[in-house]
Amino acid sequence: MRDIKLIIFDLDGTLVDAYPAIIKSFNYAMRRLGYPAQPARVICRAVGWGDENLLKPFVKRGDLKKALSIYRRHHKRALLEGSRLFPKVKKILRYLRAAGYRIAVASNRPTKFSWVLIRHLKIAKYLDDVLCADKLKHGKPHPEILNKIRQRFSLKPKEVFYVGDMVIDAQAGRRAKIKTIIVTTGSSTKAEIRKEEPYRIINRLAELLNIL
Image (cartoon, helix red, strand yellow):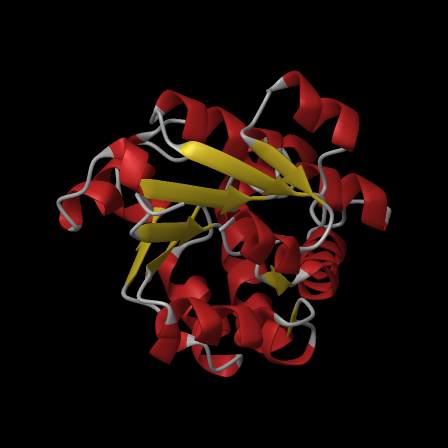
């Protein structure tokens, strides 16, 4: 893949497993407001659209602002205890840097909490750019976030790979006309991902190196 100069990664479900922290903070907010706790599988299926959209289906409209505040206060602490990198992530990022690729993160997670994760898991030194949906008009699956990052590096779509874990990542990549690789470590099923026809589907992030 000689044309590829930039690799953009999604964060949650792709580089980072923060599901335990998300589940803990979600159900803490539900209990505080008198709503029923939800099973882990239900919460995980709602992840990927940003924290406001995560909570919105489970609370009354008038409670959303308060739920979001409770969730975020708890989540800042929970992320430090309940998040980890997926296997070999640092090794992969080190390899990509040494090979001359630029590396960026595009996340629907709010900027503040993306950086809590990035700093806590000590991967900031591998990243050339981080952009989150709360800084833009549109989040994924809209292609704006991918287009903005690509344009910051003055690159063409054919010079970029995007690596994500969900259907919305495949949709965002296709709309940005960027070759998209989906790793099956997130909350979308392989059948759901196949319907979006991404460039490649992989089971582990380390398989990316074989493609490159």
